[in-house]
Image (cartoon, rainbow over all chains, first blue to last red; front, side, top):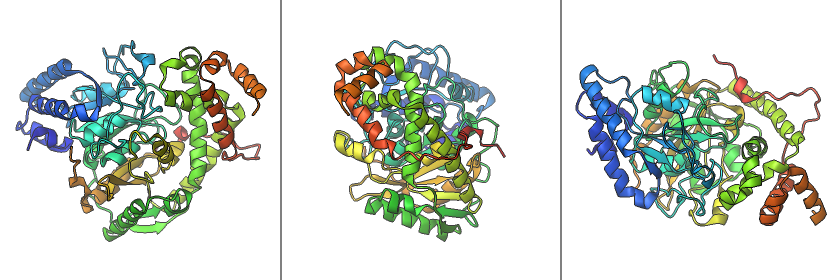
Length: 451
Length: 59
């Protein structure tokens, strides 16, 4: 098997057994990137020489002492709002073309200390909010399942690169679903951990009280291995991963996709099938009711508008021409938002969190839709605008609770369908265990895009 | 919303130059806010306080 096809865990095992060298893995990933990048535009800047040097150092160290961690010698892509020392963090924007990061972001420093290598920076929606757009310094990333379609966003390059086997893992950020959206549309795993479990220092902010950093990987085990390094606390999230679903109480939030924002028939059927499969594996699946998606969306939208406005106020006044039109349109409302609306949203957040925690008194996990639709055509702006907010990811940015998305099927157009599991704050181990149980029982982990 | 009302809001936000260059974007921003305003839940409880998600206690 070509090394670029290996999952992170598979590559790590071969590296630890001295059957695969980090140099060989990196070179094969770089060859894969060269082959598919012209069709997918997942990367916006390569870092080949530095990555090759890091891979050679990893190889020498592993030969002498063994690997520092399962990430030693593993290529990890970085969304280009995350600082990598000595490289620009452009945020995919004209506003930041002359930026230079003086230090690694805290999460990058952790990955580097664990031995990861960084082959390049990945496409994003501008400042993690404006996209897909064609009036930016770099083209938008494409969906590996069909390049005419949107890969999801804002961590669009991260989703495309992992799904297309360019790198085994990537980092994304998630303020209203931006790790889980590309994971959903690209048929991979996207994990948004509990708020502040992964440090945000050195990550360009969108909305500080909603922003999360998370991994995009091909498997749940790989997500756990990434989280082991990225998270505070030194917990081993692979422990108990294979304990299965028996006895877990899973609340199925049907009204999100049946009533609040009716999903496509194929998405809804895939969710019902996932609920059936979870029950067949021993979980106790029951319907539960949360506040409506519209409420979560309104709170998320208002807080995001207010908090992002302080980040972008100066540029919106002095350099509005250096944004993509879609970014400008999405950021401007924040400058007109009354303070009282921000406080209403923040106060309602208290009540929403309390209500979700009440439900978690009766269930261990929640099963919900992620996206209500398959990926839209990337150049069909009305369809992108229509489908973008049709999702059930924002509730867990509002509550700060961990959530993970996985592939749940293929549509008749050959595009990935998806589901989401969510857990109480800091219950990532339980969340990953359930996700792994589903992944093991379902056939989708073996499906790969045709690119 | 009248032109005068828009001009007053633009002035209050300090966005005169931006509004002059991108008047359609400013109008769209204001229209979006007006559209969404009714969707935001508003509690009349004077004692309710914000509790950001990030204070969720660790186990």
